[in-house]
Length: 117
Ligand code: SF4
Ligand SMILES: [Zn+2]
Image 1 (cartoon, rainbow, N blue to C red):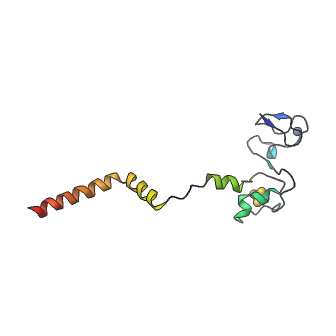
Image 2 (spheres, rainbow, N blue to C red):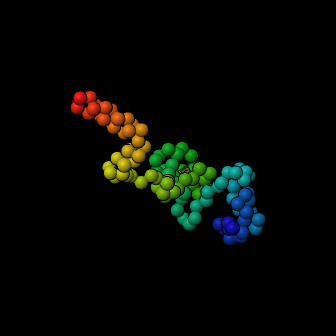
Image 3 (cartoon, protein in one colour):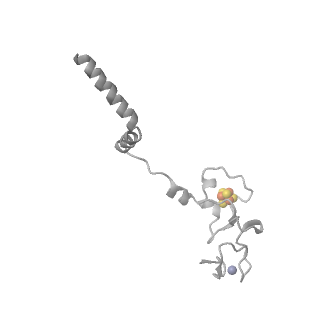
């Protein structure tokens, strides 16, 4: 169960306000718009992907304490696809192009038969 960041009361995931302290938990009074809130003294922008890539034009940047668009740099890094080694890339390509490899094999076999005759 989720808890209120201010008073730690148990809250439902769709709660718009905390039932105990009335802290706003969703933006614009809509249960589908999460309102991200800073924890501690650091502004949200310090760990936001849109601040890191300089694509945010919100007026509250870089001191936002609440934000609807916040996206953690850490979460984006966690979702990033790890880079593959050359061997893994070749193996991946070979597995995904079996038909082409079979066709090339048939062409080489046909060429070998023609040359032997
Ligand atoms: S999206 Fe919000 S948290 Fe992110 S940089 Fe812009 S204002 Fe800051
Ligand atoms: Zn509360």
